[in-house]
Image (cartoon, rainbow, N blue to C red):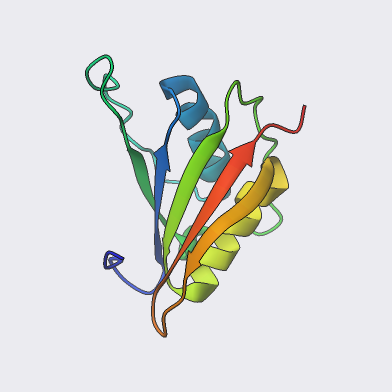
Length: 122
């Protein structure tokens, strides 16, 4: 596990997906956590794996925000790393917008990591 920036930071890493799917997931997070915009860049070199990442501050969470998930054309593997409460909060936002199946968990006293497979609700 990596080290989050502070107690309210949650690092979100997306793998096994293209740019459009990453954008759909990050749009949901941007709606729930204003002021956090990932740089999706060019998407790397063809045929090479890409990890899309974003750090959100759970302090910036808009209460009651229920962003609708855009359709995902493919499944997305997400890894959430941060404080247990922060990871739970961000995971809840994603589960509210997409189908979310937990595929792994690494517990820790001050930091945890949760792996989730996201698919569209369509």
